[in-house]
Length: 332
Image 1 (tube, rainbow, N blue to C red):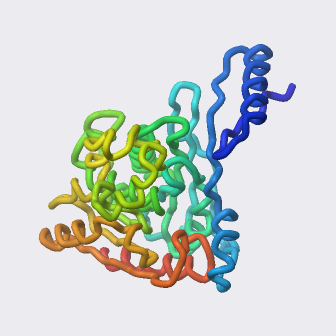
Image 2: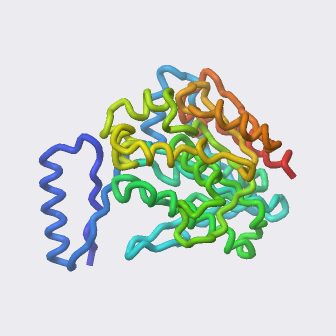
């Protein structure tokens, strides 16, 4: 017998669809007992970005995944359960003969509310071909669970990845954390709070990472530049929906969730890759000087004249992977 389908609630959903969703929920509950329907916002996808960019950037191309001998791709490996909710990770493994034994955990973007681990398939494939094992975790987004749930999930994915070191032939001391856009913000926040229990499911969990890769992710949500955009719609801004209120309503959370407020002497080496639009790396002028003052390796790589989320597409994804690969190899 077929189960009840997953209901998706997306932006600008009309009243008719809302009524149909409610009716479907009732029918499923009646037929199969109580069952939670998980809201999903699928407004941020690779195709949505492609069609938004293609007129302004005619050089943009869909990436193609081509696999090398010895590579493996493992889909939907369970790393955590929250009640009956399963959270999975996709794993891209290199040819063992090329393995660097680095593990790179990549956090997808989508305004803290949307996106999917599949956003990173093209990049993960290329990184695996350079010898790195890549882990793409699913995590709870704001329509399902607000701040800090998704951050706790990602930390749990880091813990799980380290625990699987023998299975995937990785060095647990060489786990790298990266992310794109809002995922870059989350990655930076977690990398710089690894000494705290702030976003950990269990006090004392080892979530330290050997490097941070931030792809156009805001580093200080509470900076004037970030607030101009991230708080522009007040309580309906994507960041506000995630944090449970606008900057005016929840200033403590906005500051707490700003990576720049946590950078310090124990922060990992940091590579920031930006589109050249300053709003997406707001706070970088606070972060990099602190890293330099503590002798922590850091680098900014600008891809001026590209769209936000340029790393999803050719001709840029190979260039981004080259930068990441070089940064990690320089640190060995």
